[in-house]
Amino acid sequence: MTGSGRQHRTEWSQRRKSRHHEQLIRFSLFACTLLSILTTAGIIFVLLGNAVYSPGQSQAFFERVSVREFLTGTHWKTVDGPEGRFGILPLLSGTLMVGAIASLISLPTGLGAAIYMSEYATPRERSIVKPVLEILAGIPTVVYGYFALKFVTPWVLKPVLTGMLGIDLGAYNTLSAGIVVGIMVTPLIGSLSEDVLRAVPRTLREAAYALGSTRLDVCLRVVVPAALSGILAAFLLAFSRAIGETMAVTIAGGSRILLTANPLQEASTMTAFMVHQSSGDNSADSIGFKSIYAVGLALFLMTLVINLISGWILRRFREVYQ
Figure 1 (cartoon, rainbow, N blue to C red):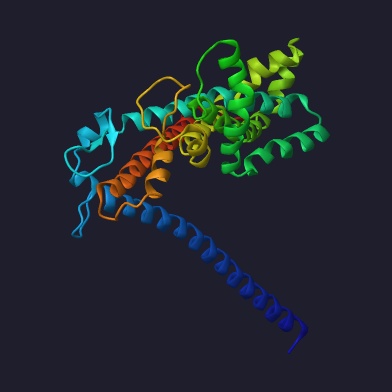
Figure 2 (figure 1 turned 180 degrees about the horizontal axis):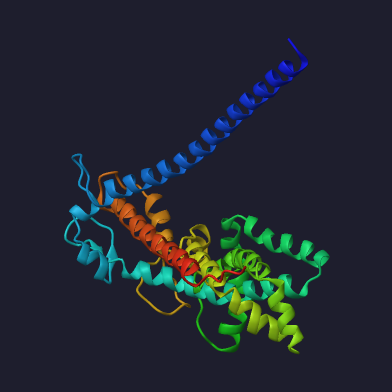
């Protein structure tokens, strides 16, 4: 065999091995994608099978409780029989109140941190500040719950509200839960917003500086408006994360199911109710156990809608630069 023939055979063998490697990588990536799809489908199947329609002998939740009562009722009492009340509005009010308080804490803090890291910090400062900020995302949520219960309420809120203003504040309250959830989701807003701000072309900044703008003017009037769609999407994702938080609000917010708009009172969220209800001694066929899946389905639909809105904002208002 000539030298050119051996070289051709070697190149053909290498191309064959490369194709096999590519096929293996493609199959692995497809398997990961399929696994995520099957996991989502399994979650939906479990929720629908216990909340909407059950093919077995046990009845699903909405086969016993009407959708109208579930969506418009103002009382929740998980007992079988005519005394049971299953209006989700008290749980929904507590969930949205925690999400609103968390948003008031996390949005300005996270956006401010993102602007500093993107526009003001040196590369060395950014390499230090960003990992420290993201450490907050690695702290277990149960630690945040006890932090709110043992520090935020007795050492931060009570001296101000009870000591100075004379406002009664219990050990469990929605305000403390919202504050720690806001601290928890701050790294999410800060990290995503910082990436969006850094994606704004440098030419826009230089053009603004050439017109005599200060650094603050460039940040607030050029960079932030150019990245507004990404910032809004990051905020909606953080809000979705806040309303789905479980352990922190379970520990700090309490378990009282009450329709209220007062953040100083104890109020249960949808996730906190699911934790407390699942830890009881309810049988698998009881209405109390089935209510867990109904509340979980409602929470799933809420987060799905928020994520769809976030994606729509990115597609609709995204600025494309050449």
